[in-house]
Length: 334
Image (cartoon, rainbow, N blue to C red; front, top):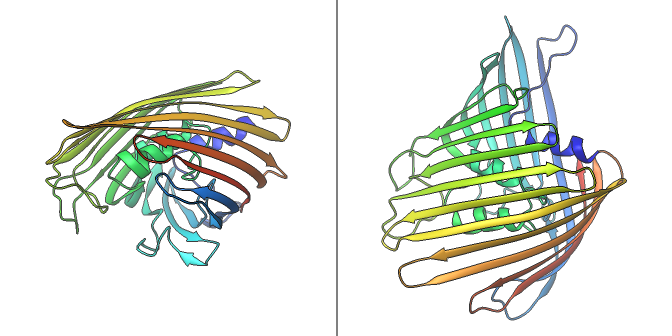
């Protein structure tokens, strides 16, 4: 079960095969994650109890489909929307767009898949696939330190073109480029990842340059460059993970952030123990701030699609009070 779940997470693009005589197939899918937690944010003076949506995986709803055009060519599309199951609100926040996860259409064939629209970035996929907590903004040190800290871009880029080669090939290539429509900054974003996946071993190298962002940018922002390497190996008794990266931001105040993460997942029958430690050190000409985060979790699968979990996080940064969180919840995939 653990190996099949990891293989599914590494798939960059999901394509729906036509069934029988049907030329077109549309699938509804998604995930609901709800948990109760007791947490104190980094630098806060008190903790609180709350009900959270998307603590281990962000809740979302999606539609994907494919139409057989003949000769091995297919038209494909994907529309995905985040939602907050605790309040019923759409998006990750009130300011999020409705189809904020992915929204694209394109062609797929022996050459791979090329789509246009809002597309997930190579850096986001390598970050979540090469750490044991995946896309958890609640408990993954790596996901939090990259995408809730150092990186200015979102998980997906608007107005973009994306290409992936055949997912059956052991050497995976993923390329995304966008145009700076509707944002104050100028210049294109571009990202490329190359991943080697075979048997129990997988490794990746990714590079991105961000020149426009729908998110707030620092004063005098010019560009941000990111390089990241990751690897994982399944020893059967334990799967180990490692990541190392650098984020350089060129603005009025230049910043260079060095990040690394190590982790492990230990399968035990229908469950898995998750362990991860991450460090991010941001340097400017006059300061140095280091954030260190440790996470521990236990995930029990009631079925292939439903699991219950408990997880804890401890975070420490320079000159502020530490943060911590403990949560227990349930995820259901459909």
